[in-house]
Length: 158
Image (cartoon, rainbow, N blue to C red; front, side, top):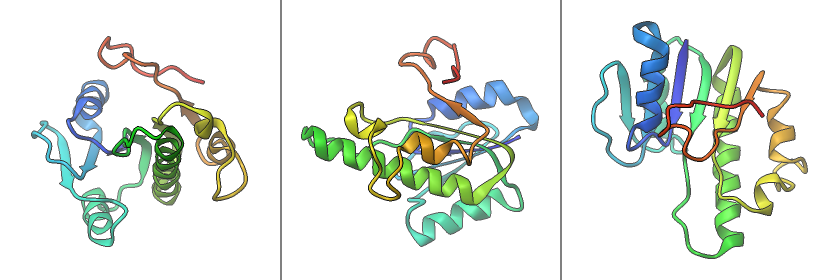
């Protein structure tokens, strides 16, 4: 299994993925911020939204296609709910766009967002909700519950 961890720093999801996948899984992580090394995880410091970062991420993937894309990206919060939600949805859309372009068969996607009407609301990009946009592309849609990773409970379907 090949997993891409978008917005990986400080590395919590990459650690959980490494434990769950065992030594045969391939994990490629990327973030703007530095991240301490994790055995068995290839880390790229960069921005997947920029050409250089995307090239570095694709080089780390090599010929592999993603079976799972995990996005823990979050915008820098401004304290203005509408703006923060819009930025969060935009990051989610970019993560989904990346996932669709790099998926293998048996694909899955999990992501986070700033809670609010914008997450379940209509996307400016295609007039559909984010979830409606995702379902035709991903065979597995997971919604991690707050604290699941720290409690070791993993993902819950949703």
